[in-house]
Amino acid sequence: QQPVQSPQAVILREGEDAVINCSSSKALYSVHWYRQKHGEAPVFLMILLKGGEQKGHEKISASFNEKKQQSSLYLTASQLSYSGTYFCGTTGGSYIPTFGRGTSLIVHP
Amino acid sequence: KAGVTQTPRYLIKTRGQQVTLSCSPISGHRSVSWYQQTPGQGLQFLFEYFSETQRNKGNFPGRFSGRQFSNSRSEMNVSTLELGDSALYLCASSSGTEVPNEQFFGPGTRLTVL
Image 1 (tube, rainbow over the protein chains, first blue to last red):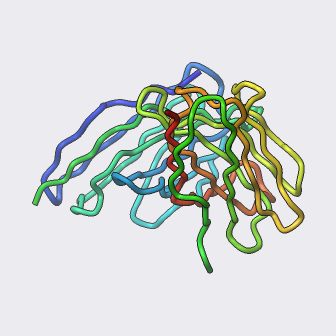
Image 2: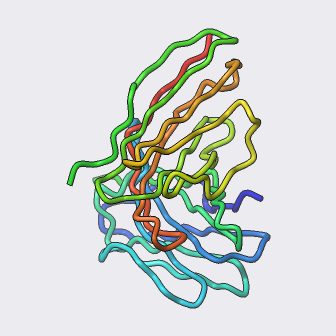
């Protein structure tokens, strides 16, 4: 079942913060976050594993609440380059990923 | 390191034809996953190959198949094309030693079925 992302769209000014949420109705083993710019391939941002392990990039942070099957991606002090569509992907025990519909983030100067 | 490459980048086919897409992973990566991306359904997992074996499979009909070669390059085949197969097909590679792991996406093949 597809995870649900919220909000669907966010509009920010440079320097503002944003939080993107990802919720699943099934027990999760991992949550992945990607950013995709128009006409480009998705770029890996972060992976969070059950048990607390995280792998990702320095300027991106995220949380994974295993009990609630939810993850949140935190974008702080946003830059113009943060604009794009953010996807979460989730896996259960089968390791087959399913993806949310995406959150469109627009950062204005 | 060179990134993931996919060929061709664009393809136009007609209904009923078949198509083969190619993906070359990052050197040293043994896992290749394939995804279909459409405006209507979003990003959907097709299958994953690791060391020439299909390790995971998504919920797509048997018309969609793939394989992986000993050099980790992978091909995806779609037979008897339908209009709904028009999509961006992405492949992603990872080291594959841990599941799941960071994935590196290629630029995609844009398939249009007329």
